[in-house]
Image 1: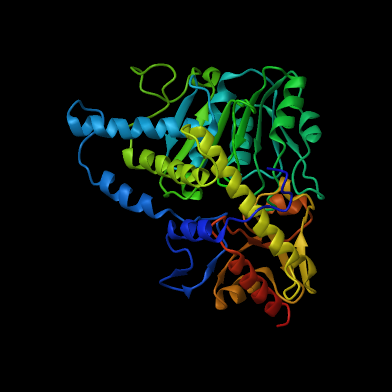
Image 2: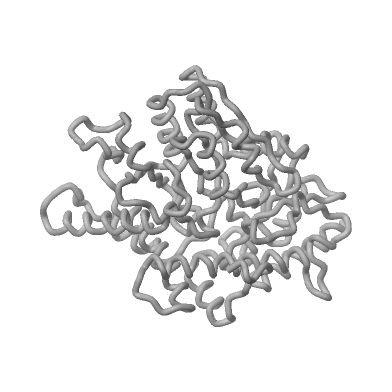
Length: 426
């Protein structure tokens, strides 16, 4: 799919069908008509999930019984578990971790490895989400290990594999890194990070935070074999209230929080929530539906991969238009009085997230001005625990973060550019 370095848009027919599948795509009860460009913080939800979630969650039966309704709920859960593995292309011998949030999952995965693997240091990067960075920091302090932090690359907006690898030695307990930055959109070269890291220590435990990247590209644990990974269904067109993790067989069998009577590789605690598992399956159904618009196949993973590749191409094409604009409407790279932070030229190495700043407006002021004109974006400030460390690494005090999705249209991008061109003149 890198044959299209500037992306490839959906056809008008497919675009219309895609938009029809999402809730609140262009309006809400507070703003009326508006553009929602804060999908890195929230996300559009699929219509199918709302109805199915309500129907399943209303069922009083316990899935851990033997009557017909309970068996049905077990089937729903089993399909959801299969689809989690499908999303990740994860080996069957690993274990799934359901929790309320992806952040809770991250602390659980990092803590289990830290408390069971010998070594003197733990490695992460400066751009990590607090749930990942702080988990490493917490368990490094708790277990008396040195914490080593790879710094960012101010050109790419990411972290270089060699900068990570040079911190790893035979005494490294684990490496924790994200798949893509939620500030710059830079996609990490996970395959190369794994190669270089395990060249230093072949049996190194590697943890990956995939929350930001999962809705934008293909994940394949057969090609990038890590020991732990998480994602958040609510950022993947689903509902809040669940976080999903997967751990490799060797992590799954480590001592961890579990009921004593369960098998050693079981990480689920308490009664399952079938509606949450159904949501996962509906996400996969949607992506497979999109894939079926381009290829014929009876294999669910094949259709899913095609759908995710088409999402990536659509978003890349929208990003290119956002950056370059048209003959009549300058893109953000060409608007006087506007800065595009960490604007890396190769769009194949970026997710659909970018940060900007105005010469004439503060970051929060700009967000408010956008909202007045029906555009929802977000300010990332150095005063925020979710932004400070990352922004400091780039020498920035803040930014306006813009994060559309594949279900946005060319017309949406042009409207954003029109508003942005207006704001620089205030």
